[in-house]
Amino acid sequence: MKTKITELFNIKYPIVMGGMMHVGRAELAAAVSNAGALGILTALNSKTPDDLRVEIKKLRSLTDKPFGVNLTLLPTLVPVNYEEYIRVVCEEGVKIVETAGRSPEPLMPAMTAAGIKVIHKCTSVRHAIKAEKLGVAVASVDGFECAGHPGEDDVPNLVLLPAAARKLTIPMIASGGIGTGAQMAACLALGAEGINMGTRFMATKEAPIHAEIKKAIVEGSERDTALILRSLTNTARVYKNKIAEEVVEIENKPGPTDFNDIKDLVQGTRGREAMDSGEINGGIWSSGMVQGLIDSIPSCQDVVEKIVTDCRFQVESRLRNMI
Ligand SMILES: Cc1cc2nc3c(=O)[nH]c(=O)nc-3n(C[C@H](O)[C@H](O)[C@H](O)COP(=O)(O)O)c2cc1C
Image 1 (cartoon, rainbow, N blue to C red):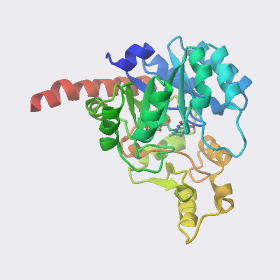
Image 2: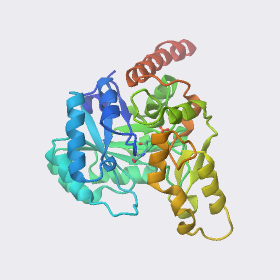
Image 3: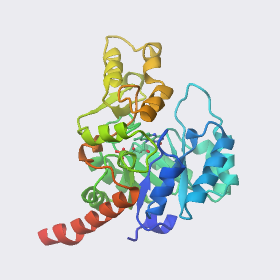
C-alpha cells in the first residue's frame, strides 16, 4: 500500500496503533511494528522519564521497524513533567510522537528541533485546524465511536472525517470505531490516508492484559460501552461494567457531580489491576464500540494482514463491481 502515511513514516501499511494506557507497552508496539504497521509506546505507562528510556530500549530490541511514542496531555491527579518525558524521547532518537488530550504547543519547539514528526489526536475539526497551524505532521481524527476520550461534540466519523478532510492540508488518519478492512476502505474514501486503532489491538495475542478482558471485548456488543465523566466535561468511553454503570448513576443524580463521589471508582490503579487480574468489574477500563465487530483474538500480524486483504477486496472487487 502507498499513501502519504506509509511514505511519511516509512511503513508497509497505513495502520497505526493508538496510545493505550496500560496496554501500549513495548511487546505490543513491537508486534504491531513487526506486522508492517506503526506501533506506539505509551509514555505514561512508564512511571518516570528514566523508566521510559528503558522501555524505548526494550522496544528497539524487539523491532528494527519504525515506531512512535504517545504522550497524553490530559489532566492527572499527580502532576506529570511532560518536558522531561519529551527530553528522553528526543535523546533516544525517536522520530514519531503521538500527542493527545490537549494542545501540544508548549512541546512543539523541542520536538521540531529534534526532527520529530508529530501525530496529534483531535476529536474536532477546530482542534485539527489548530494542530495543523502549530506544525504537526498528521492529524489523527478521533470520532465519537472511539475508546478513551471522544471529546464533548459527539460527532461520529461518517461526518467528522470528511468535514476535517475539507479543512486540512496535512494528511489525516481516521481513528475510532475501526476494526475491519471494509471500514478501512470507507475511511480512505472519506479522505483519510490511514487508520488508527486501539480496541482492535487490545484484543490480540500480544496485548499485555488478562485473557478475561480480551474475552469480554469479544463477547461485548457495540452497545456495551458507557460514557463516563460527561458531567465533568472530561468524557471517556469505557467498557460498560458494574463500576461504569455506578459512575453513570452517580453522575445522573440531579445537580453538579462532586468528583469526590466518583474518585475511588474511576481510579487508574483500579482499572490497571482489573486488566491485570481479569476481574471485569474490578475498575474502569477503556474499550470502544468496535468491540461489537471483534470476534477473535488473533496475533497483530493476522489483524493487520486481514484488514489489508479485506480493504483491498472491498475496493478491487466489491465496490468495483457495483459501479
Ligand atoms: C485501553 C485503552 C487505553 C487508551 N489510552 C489512551 C491514552 O492513554 N492516550 C491516548 O491518547 N489514547 C488512549 N486510548 C485511545 C486510543 O489511542 C485510540 O484513539 C482509540 O482506541 C481509537 O478508538 P478504537 O478503540 O475504537 O479503535 C486508549 C484506548 C484504549 C482502548
